[in-house]
Amino acid sequence: MVPASRIRNCNSAPVRSDGEFVLYWMIAFRRLSWNFSLQRAVESAVELKKSLVIFEPLRIEYRWASDRIHRFVIDGMAENAARIEALRNPGVLYFPYVEPLPDADKGLLTALAQRACVIVTDDFPSFFLPGMVSAAAARVTVRLEAVDSNGLLPLRATDRVFTTAFSFRAFLQKQLPSFLEEFPKANPLEGVRLPPLRSLRPEITQRWPAVSATLLSGDQTELAALPIDHSVSIIGTRGGSTAAGQRLTKFLDQHLHHYAAGANDPDADNRSGLSPYLHFGHISSHEMFHELALREEWSPALLGEKTGGRREGWWGASPGAESWLDEFITWRELGYNMTSHRDDYDQYESLPGWAQATFARHEGDPRPFVYSLDEFAAAATHDPLWNAAQTQLVREGRIHNYLRMLWGKKILEWTATPREALRVMIELNNKYAIDGRNPNSYSGIFWVLGRYDRPWGPERPIFGNIRYMSSDSTRKKVHLGAYLKEYS
Image (cartoon, rainbow, N blue to C red; front, side, top):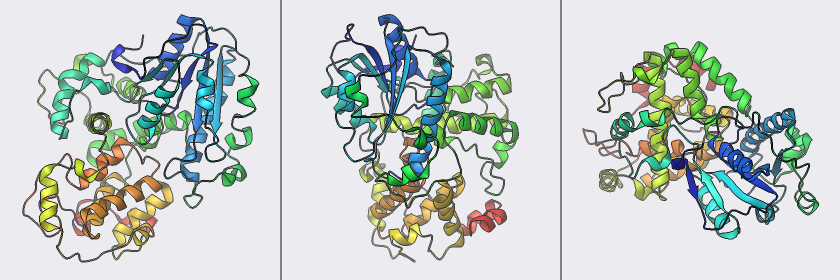
């Protein structure tokens, strides 16, 4: 059973046993495996002896909607459609919907809810999704449950915001072992027998037809007709759970062994590349952990007895595995901790008091260069390394993680105020990065401005006590020859 710590009732409406189906409103965990939300919906359908409808919508009126983001999500939809069809289970109906015009989806969820026994959705603590779920919960007249399938630690296992990775890591080392046995089913639809449901009612399918097979197949004409930003182009990285699994296998086979020593080297490019798939829910952190544990022949018996928040040694795994685990569990879930407890996680006022104070002291300091948002977007600064990082972001929807830190620090140095720097970083990252608009996006951006960090000396112009980085020092620390050749 899905643990109670993962389930949140969003309204006080009843479960209706006389409904036609259980509705899974798939909005964040866009996968059919290792998914507590889907598992909860299946459990409800089995208990109520009802069919299951998996409704996966894609709106067009979210901020930064573009060809790039839409195509990545639709890739996953195409795969979900194929997998459901291959199941040949008449009790499971998949309804993928891509909104064709503004407000075209208005009334769709309500219409589905009128036929549902209960609605299960995804409990994702960032971007517009929490507000959308709250609004829906107040509008529908049936029980709406939000299920947390974000990370290994349930969101509600914490009751406060952790201000440093060290303090959160110490908490994890004490609390996480009790959750390592609570994994979602790898295949929650396997062997499930439910009453058949051949189609939705005509009043739904005629007004809100499912996404076409041509758009699912990658047709550019239909995508170009949607009223979204066509200037942010599709990238070569394909979305979907199969692509995510292939990326995971490649990383574990070819890069994990070198990860501890080479993760920060742009020329080596040892990063896993899995953050876009995590962001759109095409892969689960539980699946990633499971596959890593198999490779490492790891079990909870290898966990260190002493905690204390140290980065290495507690997992009892290889150096590469320890380093990667710290990133995709400690640092990733630290960001989810922030966004699940604070509504202002993307606001300047959420910065630590010491950071706001040091910025206030230096806000009037002269800037050596001041660039506009358009100049930043066009990679038109005086710094070839910064321009290369921005070019990678625009071209590939990502920046190498170490250079992303430098990218942000230079934006802070080359804008008129820290508030303007924050605006520029959020706009560029969320517009171009496939893994943007995520709790980890805001962790990275706000780390540039002092979140999860401490005051550093000596005090500098513009930065004050904020950690400083320069292109010259970066060139000395990492290999950049191939990187600069690729993105200059």
